[in-house]
Image 1 (tube, protein in one colour):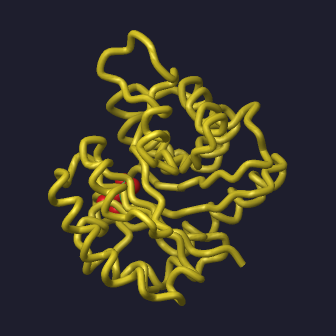
Image 2 (image 1 turned 90 degrees about the vertical axis):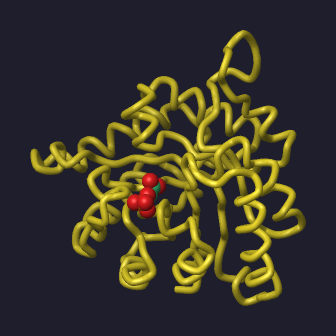
Length: 247
Ligand code: PGA
């Protein structure tokens, strides 16, 4: 059985000092626990200015960290963009890709995401690739269609033997407190698992994200094919993040 993954998405929060403080407290609590690391993986996606702080504070621990987005190109005349190569040189091990806020507010397309996933693979950075439907899409019965399309388009032509993490996050559950029901998560994760297997992906994990909190984490983690969580709001405080990671 693969380890459960707990991934913190800090979005546009936590300056370098706040990131360092969080990591020092978290580190002191979990690093000595062998049992914890035998069963869990921790990913932290800070805002870019705080990435260096997290990398330093988590040095010599199994924690994976990396940016919440990268540019499609490694370098060049792309003012304001962030290079995956530089992230890797800094010590990043993973990249969050295709979060619905990026799709919604920054026009992230399937084509751009496909290039980004390929770039991650080329650089040996683990992509944590987000998918999920809006409320309107769910109400039209299009959840499966939307998620499958996000997968087939953005993961087209990538190396299927390399590890990839797919985070299913219904857009209507992100930051709203409206968590998907166990039945809803069960239904879509089952379909996603089989879709990934049918597409011949051989090393993938599926996360659930969207209003995961200490009080709903346990039941969601018991759903088949839920290999962990992508956590926004509840990952900002060590206490609530720890409670979720301790499930
Ligand atoms: P939330 O965010 O846990 O605050 O709903 C999840 C996410 O956006 O990844």
